[in-house]
Amino acid sequence: MTPWSVVNDDQQENRPRMRYFRYAAVSLAALLVLSLGFALTPADPPVPPAPPFSEQARAAAFEDALGLRAAGLELAAGAADGGAAAATGRIVTLLTIQARALLLPEAAPASPPATAAPPSAAPEMTVPELAAALAASGSARLEDAKSADGGMARLLAGAGTAQLLAARDLAAAAGVPDPVAPAAAAGPAPSPSATAPDPETAPSSCPTAPPAGPDAGTALAAASTAEQEAVYGYQAALTRLSPAEAGPASEFLARHQDLAADAEAWGRLHCGTVPPQQPGYVLDAGFLAAPAAGLAQLEAATLPAYGDVVALAEGPARTWALQALQSAAARTLHWGGDPGPVPGLALDEAQLPLLPG
Image (tube, rainbow, N blue to C red; front, side, top):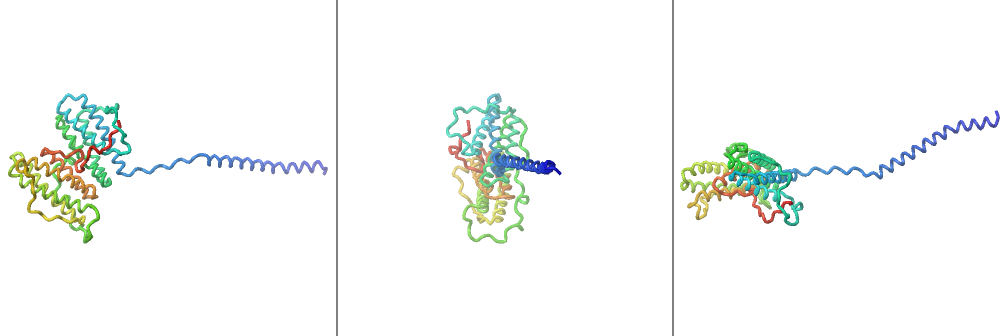
């Protein structure tokens, strides 16, 4: 074997080794580039958690109020019917107040807008369509109030109740069918057997020390007191009302008696101190002279009590309070009273944030 053949053999043996070395070097470089790319490429931000249900319900209520308000402004601008135009104007005012109550303070403008023109994309609706949309919004607010947190539940309950009443007012003024479903029309209250808690579910014992703050038991006790006073007022007014007014008053008296019994039963279930039945209550000096106006005041006085129950109770007791709140607001209107833009909640309009321009 010659020296040249030995060299050739060594070169042939080294070629695969060099080839493997090149492959390894290229792979290492590629891996280094990929690792640097992964390091320099920012990761996708985590998906933010869904807002709490109460915030979702508030945002939906706010958007509905703004949309219906814009439709009302558009409809009122071209309304020819005086009655429907007046009712639409009342709805716009109502929805403006409700939207301000539902607006987050940090989303409000720092100063009043230069113009108060309605949004350019206001949906066009007829009077029946606006009444139906308002009724649908009111029903949605009341449904959300069943599951929302306490304070938001009260706000949603009052807003929904007022929207249902406004929908019926608009339909009656325009002479169109009532858009409110019978179940949400604040009609006759359910019988006590359908709403009162089962005595077997009552707690075997309650805390001896009173609660540190308001709770469902104290709110239900206050509702029971308000109902007892309403019963007394109706009994005193019945003989002084006209025959046309006495019929509804008798029916309303029976409802208040049922509600008083229900409030007492719910109060016991929530360890509330049930107030004793009073022999009588002090009525306003003008009550007997104008019993219808006095009954309107009595009905309106029950609204905050039921608003408190909605805020502090949960489950079936809150559902019962929502029904009672709606029927009390409807009776307030029946006697010529004003349940307010958010029945069950006292609003200081001067303290509400302004709507964006």
